[in-house]
Image (cartoon, rainbow, N blue to C red; front, top):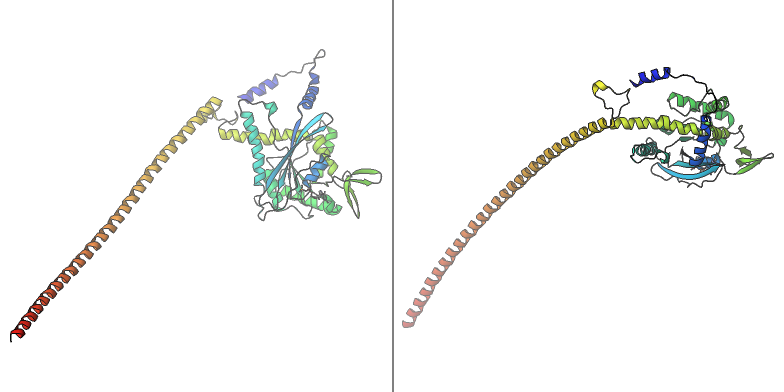
Amino acid sequence: PNTKQNASSLKEIKNVKLKGYVGFERIADQYVSKMVRDGISFNILCIGETGIGKSTLIDTLFNTNLNTTSMDHCSDKVSLVSNTFELKEKNINLKLTVIETSGYGDQINKANSHEEILKYINEQYENYVQEELGLKRQIKQINDKRVHLCLYFICPTGHSLKAIDLNTMKALDSKVNIVPIIAKADTICKNELIDFKKRIMDEIFKNEVNIYQFPINENEPSVNNQNLITNSLYPLAVIGSSQMVKVGNKVSKGRQYEWGTVSIENEMHCDFVKLRESLLSTNLFDLIELTHIKHYQMYRANRLREIGFFDDLEADTDQGDFRTIKDVYIAKKSELDEVIQRNEIQIKEEFVKKVKAKEQEIKEIEKELNGKFNQWKSEQNEWRDRIEFKRRELDDQIREFNERKFSLDKLKLSTLSSNKYS
Ligand code: GDP
């Protein structure tokens, strides 16, 4: 019904000319002042092996030294380390959160390396949903920790992607805006880099990994051009450094080697400038917006469906799908009541079963004990009879002995007296 209504109200919209100044033309200025007042939260997730250059690149991107803690290669599992910084450029405040992987690619079995990362991303969405659904919420103050950009650092092997790269990117591509970059690009020579990039992109397409596409909008030709170029440079080859080097008269960030100097700002040397401009100057807002309208909405919709909400279009009234919050509440409550009732019956049945089993066990123990007692009693009786028999035998022997002794004594006495008188 809503779709029909929308279509008819669209037909009714008429183009009207204003006769003079009204003032809403200044809404864009209002947005800018709001942004200046509130500042922006931007959260970057850096995925890559330890030592691949994550911290250095973030420092280079933001032209600062964030002093993030360096990790070692000994972690037995992948974990995430998050740091938040307040940055200010002119009058715009940026609350930057950098989340870096620790121990990524250091395990022998790398099949589950993405799990902790996925868990972190989902947790941020879940926190946001909970804040949105909260009764005392203040959307303006929701602490936005959702990941807006995922920089995936590819090892400059010159070969192709590793299994862990494809696994992780595939697992995350519907959750975050992934920008794959070739790290430490100064370690590969130009023609090898071209082939390397091509092989990587072939693998990304073959495996249907959705990476972030810098947006093309016909109304902004200058931005369009830049985004088209940046898209064509995928995966962007970057070099990070905090050292200043001098090439000719120009001083810029770069890396100095015995055989020469690479300048990060030189677009012949790497794609760093394109990356920085495309991410920070041109598409920062798009990354934030896309996270909200695409990735977060998908998470939110799935969560709400789990709870029992349906869109008007999805809802099938004939089937009795729920519409209002009250309906959802009643349905959920009766569903839970049923579950509780079922659980109660199950618990009672299990309890009775356990009591019966215990009773049976006790009866068997009792039977066993009775058997043992009877056996012991009959053994006792047997022993007692045997002892009684022995005692009687002994009594008879004593009596016999005494009788013999008596007659012997008697004989002795009569012999003695006859000898005396003879
Ligand atoms: P993380 O563990 O991924 O954060 O790596 P780090 O940023 O701490 O960098 C590890 C080492 O690699 C440091 O010695 C950096 O100077 C060096 N490094 C960082 N970026 C580059 C790069 O683009 N090229 C080269 N050759 N070395 C780099």
